Length: 539
Image 1 (tube, one colour):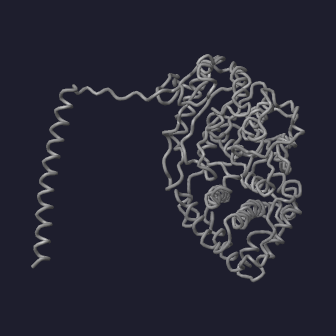
Image 2 (cartoon, one colour):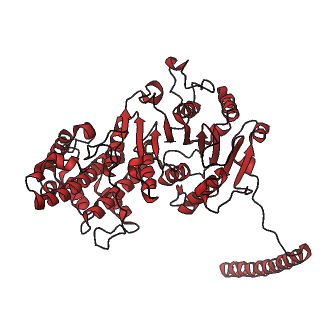
Image 3 (cartoon, rainbow, N blue to C red):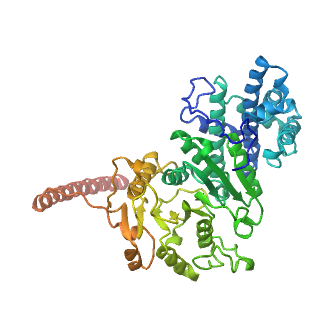
């Protein structure tokens, strides 16, 4: 099981957080756009700070406010029952709540927000919280608020802004709103950072698609390049919203960027999620922290087309079951690493660049052929463009499994489902698109119906020209083992036109004659106007 905060019963799951309707309170309402308003207000305060720097300032304070809110609510309860117990750290840890020393509590920082030394007070608070919770938070929290580059006035205004989040709500609602704000800020900073932002953040609509298709109800969930932990947050949310028990899934991950690892630890802590997230700067290929574990669900968005990943020590690595990946591109190294870690009945969803579906360079085509022939490719989804902050490279989803004959599934051995979702999604600004809830449901329902799952209801699978196709491995071989969905789904059927051709042609001819006549009339008027202008100028 993953390492987490101590509980009364170490084998028990953390209590699910109830999703509640938004409050109508002035500052606490979690209505549509609330998170965006908070982000815009906070962004105005950053002045000349780079987004990559400011995100740690803002996210660290939101995290501190979150754990302090949980602590102070429990503290108030204990003061009513047993004042002596209110100062016992074990009383909080047993309830899955961080112990927050008195000088680190949000109320103390809020009262001193206008102090010129507020930066040092925040650093001291972060140090005290880490010291009080070393197993969960050692080395995780930002502690450079006292540096000269951070204006104390800006920090005070930011504390005031964050203090308003959840005010007027119940403690549970306030914490839920804080969690939502934290998640929105992660996405907002990813957008502000552009390419670098994509290194720690996968767009939520892409994560929801992966989670909705894999449905991680029970078992071990793993991400070998977990970024800020969005895959895990969505997985826990899926379990919660579908009536499952959060303790039924155990979360594991690895991340090579220490700053991003810290973001992931804070992101999960804000959601009350216990997890075993490992960090080392060598990465999952060179130092696989969890090499002996196999997982029921793997969700991953590896960096696309990494060219500097290879090391001679990987030459005979047992993970390369389908062929040694090329040193100049890690795409097929990620796929094989993930397959290596799949449990016998496990399934995986992986985001990769579109080129991975068709490339034949440096043995990639041969590896793909062997994977197809081994029947480990379950489904391929072509995504719309403009989904990602970090790249305009079109992306796709690979779904992998070790066996297509599982309990509750239709026997799909020898088949691959292709879904072409490139026409889905909507633009949310000039440069970015996202999949709507309806889009995610359409893709996931198609996949589950194809697999013939018992809980797919009355939804039955049928090929849909232009959208989905269940192809045999023989058909894939005929296409040279290229896995691009557009090759298989064909063109969308055009609506049948019941108007006879002769009638349509006559109507078009009439419209064309009318437009010609209008054009001649306009030419006459323009010519007359020009002549009048010339006459006036000559007079």
